[in-house]
Length: 364
Figure 1 (cartoon, rainbow, N blue to C red):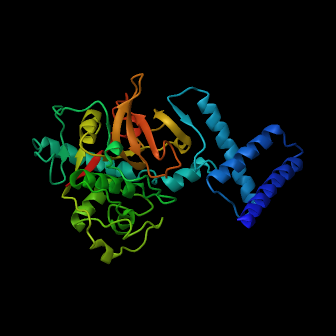
Figure 2 (figure 1 turned 45 degrees about the vertical axis):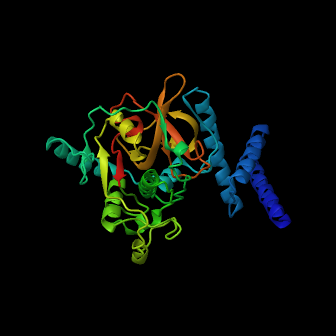
């Protein structure tokens, strides 16, 4: 323990020296603000257990941290409906963050367009069945459901703890699994943590491992496979590997079908979420890297969805601002203990950040 503390103190001293030397080499000086920011960086490192291999890398990450903190503080001065702050990603550039925690541009956009075309064909064919479009159809919401003013499936014990996809673009697998876990709890009373790695390794075509995938395709794979195994049986590895076929035969939780809410219909989404959590896709703007709390209303581009998440409820602020409650897969140290709230019933028909583009869920 003493050796570990001494090593950390030496590393911080080296970083401080590097900053002082950098200031001297450039003909400048390290002022009080620099030292205050250095203290904040040290505290952030300790809070998130972050260390670096070389003094040069520590210095580079300090400069990224400083720039991010300047952005965070400038944004918070605007008095928006949400606040920014330190997160596990404060030492990453926006380019690094997006590359590590979202899917490649265009991957979900193409899938969404294809599915919307299928939706149009399905709804023109006639009324949907009682099972909300069973057989992989689409629920054409009629507005007759009695929808509560607020819903939060966390309070009903139907949501597993927030998970961390780490540096793999596997959000699609986490969103899929979260909806199945919750539905299983609602139907059976048992909350079981299921395997994202099974989907990451085995869903093909329709997914590209850490390079993205689609919750709808993943749900269809679970249906065809006859179920999904547990996280304990097939643990997460932060990378895609060869499908472990023997594990896929351990079908702990099964789903019978999947369904999708008609696109661009947040009233239908509310009715669906009142029954169970659903998977959605959104555009993750770089500013969300620093989201700390409140109702996010942008910036983002609803036409460029690149991240899959799970809607576990909805509600409204005392002033009337409506929001969705969203479970993310960036760990519990981000946002509101791993969750974020995003505007509900936004002016854009696609929903805030495109959240109404492709809302889907499993059936059991």
